[in-house]
Length: 249
Length: 310
Ligand SMILES: Cc1cc2nc3c(=O)[nH]c(=O)nc-3n(C[C@H](O)[C@H](O)[C@H](O)COP(=O)(O)OP(=O)(O)OC[C@H]3O[C@@H](n4cnc5c(N)ncnc54)[C@H](O)[C@@H]3O)c2cc1C
Ligand SMILES: Cc1cc2nc3c(=O)[nH]c(=O)nc-3n(C[C@H](O)[C@H](O)[C@H](O)COP(=O)(O)OP(=O)(O)OC[C@H]3O[C@@H](n4cnc5c(N)ncnc54)[C@H](O)[C@@H]3O)c2cc1C
Image: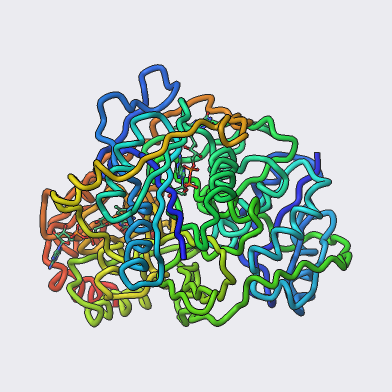
């Protein structure tokens, strides 16, 4: 089977982002960028399915400016076979991303599409589900276990109350949660090899999709700051403060 | 304007998170209806009818909706919701799973996890693990929105007298099948709505030691949470994770024990009213957000605390 993995270039998760002085957006100038951590987990899962012999080919796709090719190369170094870059100047919104991915799905005809459950910049948690609706595929979101058998995939999902298991008929969408696997690191030889793997560049027009968005960012503000409070000397002082000062006990 | 709120429930009673979404709907203004999709869910519809300010309850009662499968419920919501200006659901795992499908079926964007209503088309939502608050405006004809529960006070669960109407539409995908679930059983209050939350991190060392937190929690009527490190290490199950990618909590009192205070953890608890941190490392970043910090070994502090509260 063939697996398509969608990956997003985002701010590195260790970086604490700040908003611009004019509050027009967050300041991403000169900050370290990386693969969205949930997308790394998506690649790892696809590569493991290939190593087990369940999948024959892993194709990665990323949508965004030219710099996304860095993240596609990282995915190729982690074991994906080839890459597709859909070049779009600005970061399109989730619905536009889902429409572009739908067009890629129509061309590639994968048996499974794996995405991250959420990107750590916009924290939207939408794209996989939207792609599911647009393609009519069933979805297993927030996956902590994926088992493929006889044209079906069993997905165990992390839900508020615990875990839920669904059986989906392929082709299907899976979005990854944190505990699905622990992604490997790319080795130097694999990073070198990845440079020679095929990477195709397309435009939204090639895919017949017009990128637009009806959701506009008006402002980005810093959150209400919490200031550090006091240090208490011992448990007795803590209990006293909670009872008599904060009045929460 | 007319707003459809999607009820979250277990086929028996309405979940508190729904009342938060109703509160957000009331801030937008206009008539508010509620859709209950479930199996043998008349009891939920009866609860819904009593929620203050609800005009109409629309009940779709069918086996196809028993487990809230996104494939089925999204088709129903998209059909019923097409006549409304806004569709709102709580930003729980059920809402997050289903609503983006609704948005895509209606060919509109989704505004996830709102924390404030500015006007009928403008909302605030946290981005970058809560390190920035975005104000976003939607020009879509139907606004599809999920609501962060901790940001709104629950609407009144009683005082209403809405009518209940049955909906006959059945959407039943043959591409998805419910296999089973393992739900955590707990006598303690629900993490998302508990007035006090005590969370443990990697510093707890193992799952057995979480008993120290549990007995304290029972004294305080608290829920027990955890950091991702504690969940990943297998100390406790995933439904206890607090943070950017786990549950968002904002109790009156949050006690972080053996948790360093990574931004992803803070994203899930920094709106708590009072934060207490117990950590043996005085440099731990958690102290930068704590109202009361105790630098101590948790294995000494917890038994003392329990004794002090007895
Ligand atoms: C501060 C801020 C302001 C923004 N303002 C605007 C705006 O005004 N207008 C606008 O149109 N957009 C804007 N964006 C961009 C937009 O919100 C997101 O980039 C877009 O929604 C992409 O999907 P997501 O982040 O919602 O994905 P999520 O649904 O959170 O991500 C889930 C998964 O989808 C896949 N995925 C998501 N994006 C891509 C991609 N580009 N390529 C490949 N796979 C992908 C990945 O597998 C990812 O793990 C803004 C973003 C930020 C951070
Ligand atoms: C994409 C992504 C999403 C994430 N989402 C989340 C999330 O939702 N929630 C979350 O929590 N994390 C999340 N994380 C992980 C986060 O970055 C941290 O790794 C995690 O929160 C650390 O957990 P911790 O504080 O328990 O562990 P550590 O950082 O290891 O801290 C343990 C603390 O315990 C203290 N300690 C040890 N022994 C004792 C003792 N005997 N007495 C007192 N104190 C002691 C130590 O001083 C230390 O400060 C995410 C990470 C990524 C990349």
